Image (cartoon, rainbow, N blue to C red):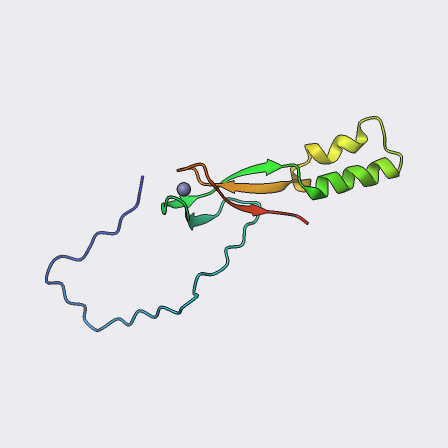
Length: 106
Ligand SMILES: [Zn+2]
């Protein structure tokens, strides 16, 4: 459901002039975190809330390696792969399924 702002009726006069300041390069760098992000998709231009998917990232591999070095064999080194807290988060657009961003823990 797209939320659309109703355009003002014809002949509508604003009480006072609103100055819209458009600063060049305003495009704030979007910071992706673990949670879904409200943004406009660069691919389909839709206003979306990103879908997040956990993927095994560098940190999980690193912890796995450390656990192996510490002697935690027997599957313990697989723990990082089960913990979402060790994984990277990929943000995808629910509309066009494109990857719009990624949160990396490294
Ligand atoms: Zn999209």
